[in-house]
Length: 204
Figure 1 (cartoon, rainbow, N blue to C red):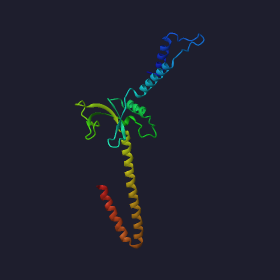
Figure 2: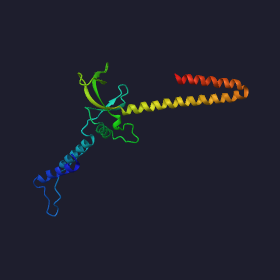
Figure 3: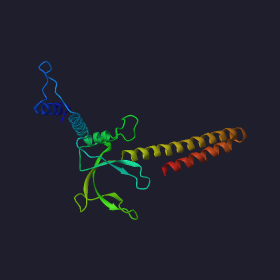
Figure 4: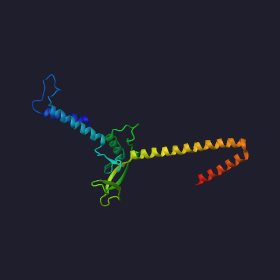
């Protein structure tokens, strides 16, 4: 329901009540109580939120040990674009700076089942399930936070490896320059062996 429709409905409700009309010189004004205003505002807020989240109830998926948010899910299969909008309405995430921000491509439809966590009374974890199997239920899910952290960790690892490789290359070049002055043949042999080793490592 749009705000305009809700406004018309609330206005008509006021007009239908006895004793709410104003003087002829103010035909567009009506008396309203504090409780009525509060109720109208609550209705407007609810309808506005419902329009933005498409009526989708978002839940958080959390890491079992740390309790950190990994992503979000909703029970049922929903359109990916609407689900993403519902997630962003739920979190208020900024599209440029917030790792919780969900895009349609981050979302997928799955089937889950609940499994009790051993040694944790009342705690359950969610596992993938065969569609329509016993205890299975449909979900729309995104692990956008966990995916972001995995990609960030992989970037750190790649950067570390590149740094080590660059440091080794600098050391090798320094050694070759020294050998070029001390023993050029030894330098050529060292370079040959390095290239041979590098070729084997690349093939592996």
